[in-house]
Image (cartoon, rainbow over all chains, first blue to last red; front, top):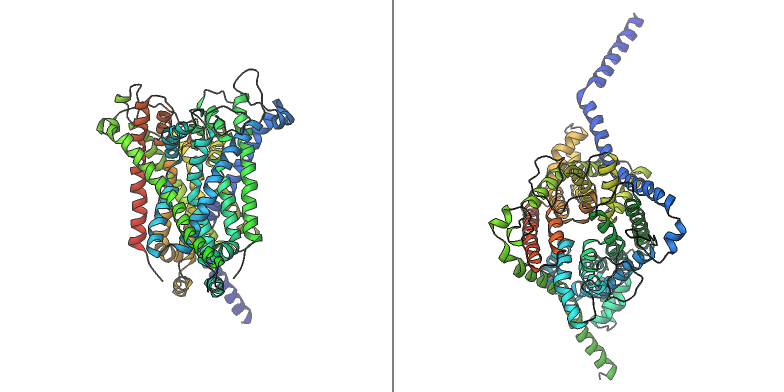
Length: 314
Length: 285
């Protein structure tokens, strides 16, 4: 008797189990979970893909060109004979333009942020912020056109010795490109500074300028520096403006009126030409791309570290 | 009562306000000058002939038909791929993933991808899609590259939108016996949709304006046909503009400006739609 009851119970439990296993919603749930996990994994695969693709051809490149001459040769002429593969001229071109752009964008961007966060009436703020957003949304090819057809002629009026392609024009326009980024990220950092700190300074008799420069900016410094570093990274990876305005002459120079070539502009130049896959010219794209990728990666990691390390909590 | 020091401080305070204001105006004036220049240079060349012709050696016969259709093809393919992958990633991170090293890794990875220069994505596309998968320098390779490029933007925007759906709506749905996916598809997604859509459109408008990755992937600068399938070679608006800008003749510069006007109008329509959607569906909880 009791045995049959136990048997009955087991049977019911088994039935319940089979119902649970067969039930459709549960299956769908599991499938969906895995589909979503797959989507999320794509972003990881993208990074793995970037590293793998760059590494693969870069290793091939260094089988033909010694790493030492890549890092120390002062000439970059892979498209001519005799071929030289020194990255220094391209690095100096990239850094010259990026530093120029930062000289334009960091002070102006910071002052814009201070104005918007501390001085501007609400109505002005609500007009200017969308304008800066539009400025940030203009495609870089449009900036390139602007650099070549407007800024360059202006520079050549002032400095007649400047070339048709020069680093200065590219610097100024890349500066305009990263300006909204500096302004809006720095402003976010300043707006986050609590009202009470400002009130405390005012109570001590400080002027608005003193409050802005001695209280708000120091308090928001981590965010401001992070915005500078990100803008720097954006400028060094910028491609179309420098390709159009700065020219294609890789050389070691600090003269902003001369034509230079950046790492990005070189990659575009080679891609536009007729190159054989697997040739040494083809492999230079990856070696230069790897250099660029490593530099921006290091800069972005620094930016994240700065934000975390110096973050002020209120 | 007020000493010299105080007068000086007040003067500095007043003048700094003007200086900060002038600095702010730099960006505004730059945008104004840029738009003014482009419109005065290009508006005279913008007519039906320009929109309906292929590129040509003669500026007066040149047009952007192949570039416009190429851009539409690339966006048409980028949109579904990036939308599904981006929304899927955001849903996984916000609704499914448990806190841990793997979730953390995905999140950090997405933030880092957002900072990778677009030209590096072009190199990825060249190595992976053009060479690795043997697709060749075709529309599909360009569209897949663009999908990966805009993926981080869509993920971050969708995450924000999903986060803003209050927890009590989910709890109410669970209390009615809904499963996780039923809750997501019928409660979370409808509430978060305007935010997701806005981010999605902004990401696509970024893709419309990108030049560098497609140059690397191998878009051409001279295409004299309308592509009819994704396995054909192609060009897009920014690359056509680039090609015209690089020519020394003034007439080609002017049609580059006309091309820019077309590009800006496309972007304006996309961004306008995004703002309209945001305002129309904005809900406050």
